[in-house]
Image (cartoon, rainbow, N blue to C red; front, side):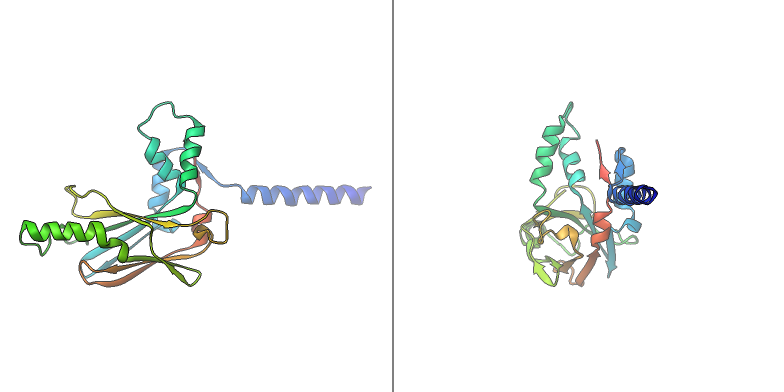
Amino acid sequence: MKGLNRYLIATFLVFMICFLSCKKTEILDIKEYLNYLADPENGLVKEKTVAGVKIKVKYLPEDYLVYNIVKEMSNVEQTYKDSIAKSFQNSVTFMLNIGPAENEEFDITRVDVSNYEEFAKRIENMAFNAQDWITVCVNKKEYHPDIVRLENINALEKSRNFIVVFNSTKNTENDFRKQDMILSYDDELFDTGVSKFLFKAEDIIDLPAFKF
C-alpha cells in the first residue's frame, strides 16, 4: 500500500511539473508586453546596420495584432477578440523597418531623389515591389510573403515600416512558429546586399500570452 501511495504521489508531482512548465506565462499590462517584444534578449526583434542603413525586423504575435485592432474600441467581448485571433491563426506576421543608422539623418523616401517624379517612383517601388525583396526560409524551404504592405507613407519619420505576412497553418507541420525561421531582405533600394535575420522557434514558443 505504501508503495502504491509513493507511486501516486510521484505521478502527481510529475504531472504538476509538466503542467506548470507547459503553461504559458501571462502579461496583463500593454507596456510590459511591448517592452517584452522590444527587448532583443527575447529574440523577437533583430536589427542590422549596413552602409548607413538600419534594417530592423520584429515578429508580431497574434495577441499584439488583435490588440492593435480593438484597442480603440470600448466594451469588446472576448468572443469578438477570439474571432479576430482566429483570422490570424493561419499566418505569420513581421514588421520590417528600413531607415537611417543612428548617426545618419536622411529620409529613405527622399535620399538621392532630386525631383517629385523620382520621389513618386521611389514610393511606387517600395509600395509594389517589396514583396520581391523578402523571403523566409523554414526547414530549408524558401517562401515568399503573401502580403507586404507599406505603412506610414506620408509620415514625417525618416524610416518606413512594411507589414509582411506569410501563410502558415497553425498547429500543423507547416506551422512556421514551431520551427526556426530565417527572414531575408534583399536591399534593392540602397544596394546593401542581402540581410538575414534568425528567429528561433523556442523564442516564439516561450512568448507570454497577452491578456487584455
